[in-house]
Length: 355
Ligand code: NAD
Ligand code: IPM
Ligand code: MN
Image (cartoon, rainbow, N blue to C red; front, side, top):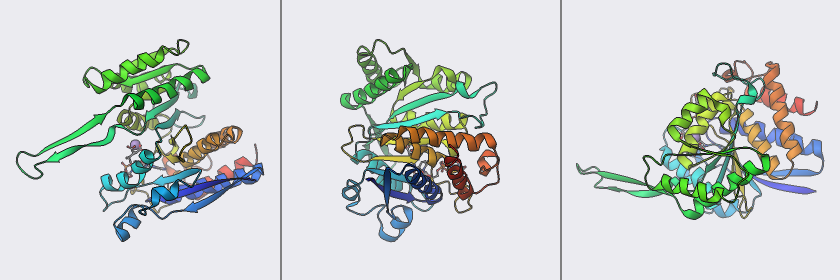
C-alpha cells in the first residue's frame, strides 16, 4: 500500500489543537479509501522547544524533514519569544530551504460561510492567490547600522530575482490557463521603482507565452479596494511575498475569517517536501480554550490530498466543510457557534461518511 510520510510540526498556541483534527480527518480519508495510508511523525519544535533549548528546531531539522513526503504545520509564535526569531528559525527557514516558491492560498467563499460584504454571493468570491514564497520583501537581506546610536540606520532589501519572478509568474499563468480563468498581477511599480517595475516587466514577458490567458494588472492599493468593492474581478492572482501575505488575510476576512483560510507551500518540482498549513497564527488570545476553528487546517489537508493526486478526496473534504457551514449546527465561536475544535473535527468525519 502507498504510504505517505508526513512530518507534523504542530507548533504553538492553537497549532496543536487544529492539527489534531487535521490528522484525524486525513486518517479517516485514508481508511475510507483503503488504497493509501499516512505515517505521521511528530516533531516538538516551536516556542516551548526554544525556551528549553534556545533553538526553534533541532540542528539537523532540515536534513530530517527532507525524508518526508510532506509537512503538516499548525502555527508558530508565542508570547515571550520574539516573532522574528520564532518565524525565521522555523516556518520561514522551511519555506526557503525546501524552495517552496509557490504559496497557494484559496480565497473562496464557501456556501454557508459568512462574509461582511453586502450583496455578495458565494460565486462572487472565488480566487486563488499564487504568492511568491521564497524571496522579495522576505529575502532577509539588510543591515542594522550604528545600533542604539543617534545615527542608527536599518536597511531591509527587497530581493527580486529574474528566476524567482519568472517561475512564480509562469506557475500562475499555467494555473490560469488550465482552469480557463483570468490572471491578475498585483504590484506597486509607481512607488517601488526597481523591484515592482521589474515584476511588471516579467509579468508581460511571460504573458507572451500565454496569449489565451486574459490578464489584469493592479496596483496593490487599488487591488485591496477592489477586493472589497468588486471581488469577482479576481480569479487567479499572482503577487509578491509581502503583498500576498497581507492580501490573503484580507481575503480571509471576506471569505469566512481566519478559521477558514488555508495555504499550501509548494515545491512544484517535488525535489523537497511541500508544507501544508492554515494561514492563521497561533492565536494566543484563544489558545487552550477549545475555541479554535479547525476548518482552515482541514482545508489545507484537502490541499495536501490534491498535491498527492487524490483530487477526488480533496474535493470531498471541501464539500464536507461546506455541509458543516450550511447546516450551522456544529461551528466554533468565530463562526457564531458554540462547538469545540474537536466537535467540529468529529462533524467533518461524520460528513465524510455521508458522501
Ligand atoms: P493570528 O492569526 O494568530 O490571530 C488573529 C486573530 O484571528 C485572533 O483574534 C485569533 O483569535 C483569530 N484566529 C486565528 N486563527 C483562528 C482560528 N483557527 N479559529 C478562530 N479564530 C482564529 O494572528 P496574530 O495574532 O497576528 O499572531 C499571533 C502569533 O502567530 C504571532 O506570534 C505571529 O507571529 C504568529 N503567526 C504565525 C503564523 C504561522 O505560523 N503560519 C501565521 C501568522 C501569525
Ligand atoms: C503567513 C504568516 C507568515 C508570513 C509569518 C508568520 C512569517 O503571516 O503565513 O501568512 O508572513 O508569511
Ligand atoms: Mn500572514
